[in-house]
Amino acid sequence: MSDDRPRNGAGALALSTGLLALAFAFFPFVGEFVSVPTALVAIVAGWVGMQRADRFVATNGGEAITGLLLGVGGLAVTAIVMAATRMG
View (cartoon, rainbow, N blue to C red):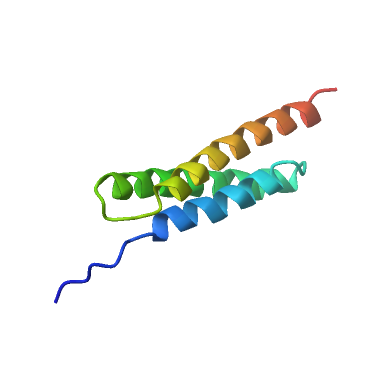
């Protein structure tokens, strides 16, 4: 029996964890422990979601790309906040 439903889980996971990573990235110390792991999950899930969308297995390629970019942004903001709080 064939199941032709789109496999949109990775893109949805990327978007939700990317938003969470970026939101927590602005909080010093706590953000380091929440933002970094969730950003990495967002990046990996976004990559998987983009691959699925390219193979027409998923229909939410935009969500996957957005989640991946939010994950990268979360890592960048976390790095900036870490550098700012460690200086001085």
